[in-house]
Amino acid sequence: MKRVVVTGMGTINPLGDSVELFWENAMKGVNNTGIVTKFDASRFRSQVASEVASFAPEKFLDRNEIKRTDLFTQYALYSASQAIADSGLELNTIDPFDIGVIWGVGQGGMETFESEVENYVKGDYNPRFSPFFIPKLLLNMASGLISMKFGLQGINYAPVSACATSNTALMDAFNYIRLGKAKVFVTGGSEAPITPASFGGFAAMKAMSGRNDDPKTASRPFDVDRDGFVMAEGAGALILEEYEHAKKRGAKIYAEVVGAAMTADAYHMTTPHPEGIGAAKSMHLALAEAQINAADLDYLNLHATSTPVGDIAELNAVAKVFQGSPNLWVSSTKSMTGHLLGAAGAVEAILAVKSITDNVIPASINIENLDPAIPAGVQIVVNQPLGKTVNTAMSNAFGFGGHNSTVVFKRV
Image (cartoon, rainbow, N blue to C red):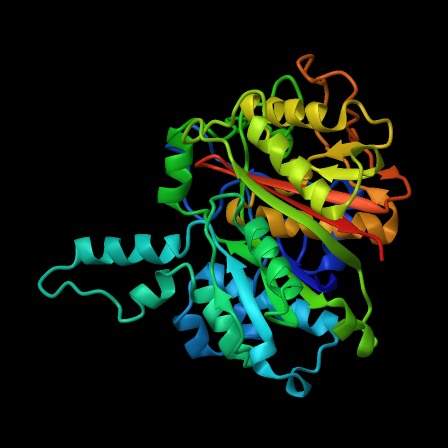
């Protein structure tokens, strides 16, 4: 099997429009959650979200490109452009069929869907849909347009596994490179879900926080008073590259991808197995593939979204796998970013990689009182980042439908 490394990264999310700013704000414990500004959410139980502060697609897309793309695709193009530039790849020197795009999206063009249907319903005598309706809506359009913008003709598709989606994309890219099917992948995920229907649907499920009077503390994984997740938007992109190819061109290497796995809970549509059986198996399999002992893992970026059931279920799985390892520290950075749904795994993978390059573990913020149900021996980085040598890092992402996904990174 060929080795696979990370040689480029890019992002836009509620903490920043670059990896550098994202990391800087994560180290400061910044949280930009507030009352929704994209529409009037006053009729919903939940009214808070983590929005991208400012985004100007006209700075990198022309007028026609903007007209023909949904926001989730614009976020994808932006972060992918950053990652490609960061990698130093000279695309014109590589066979385009050796470079693929696997890009995950959980919901697709929700904004487009809502506006087009609303316009149709309101139509008087000649209701019609835009000819761009379907192309803007499709989940695979981000992967397709990344390939078109940069002339990448290798493997190209969009996996979907709810909030595990971009971890799935990373795992697939990792495996295709290992098998010699490609030399480089642009991979990751994007999401633009802060729309009335998407937001309202999650609010109706009572899955999101109702802490409307204090938005900045609404996302509080592991705190005894957590009451649901905070919806967020944005994208994360990583360049995965075959090690010898990267080494030959003198690329900077952030970390190596050494293991990945997926399992299913086969338990409930939206609720994880309370004992974390599927999540534990996913972590076990990823560690085995990485040839890393559980006692040697340094950092685990948890999926934990700040829901009463989900956080404890995942920590039960952690307790099973790591059995109170004194070396392991865990945190949930959703306390700062909110939950980017299908893009969460990619954005959090960037933080896992940065923990290795900078030897710092980002914190879980907004913790006032740790839940007494947390299993003994699980060490959570609370409120302040932890300076620690990080040679190995793991990132979990789970999704509705019982999807569990795990990716493992290692210092090269």
